[in-house]
Image (cartoon, rainbow, N blue to C red; front, side, top):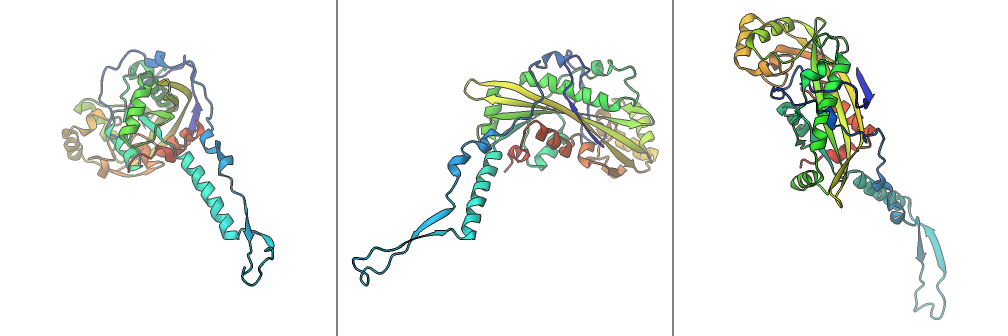
Length: 342
């Protein structure tokens, strides 16, 4: 199940939470001051059309007919004017011209767009790299606890969607004011991209729903043990929120402007195998489940304890690629323009 939300007003709940259920989470910390104050009031929801694909298209139009002059042999027909014939270009030639124009339009659409990941999660970054995207990583310092405190019961699975979206929005709001044109242009040059005119900031957060409660990072071996016991042989739901902020880059005056922001969420069911107590203790002893939301990873040592998932497997690693693509498209981003890994 996937839901896409329009940007919330500046006064709504926002904050930072860490993906639950399958990613090496961002390092735990006290967080910063309520970063939602950094959210730009000028951010509006609008779909940006790619003007570059249309610009100059008239100059690429090619005349569909070719004038062919049939010349008679000058020796045999001295003094006579050769008749003039006009013929249409063969069908194959016309098709080639259309394909060339389409290819040029595709090239225009494939302009470089910088992907800014508002997360320190190695698993999220690795997922993006596998999908052909080298992200510019800027870690958010949003205060997760402050965001969840705005809800009546932070630990309840009620309003799970609203909570993960609020956390993702807060992460994005904390990072966007830190992004400058010089940094984006420099990063693009380092990764071999053409000078970009746009970027997106993507923030994510997940929470694991187990028996009516939402689980975050356990932090201690004792809490981790009890949580993993609940996961053993159980089917649980992972809620993942995503926020995408579209930025316009002006290379001329070295400025960045927020042009659109949208959020969305998805829910994925995770099916756990049976774990005995010795396996749980051995897993906890590695330290891996202590600082990840939900107390497990699917892409690490916890993978063998997961029988499968129903839904988007990427979301279990902390970032749903299909959902991010959908939201990015709504704010005017051509997904292939993000591919910057050779």
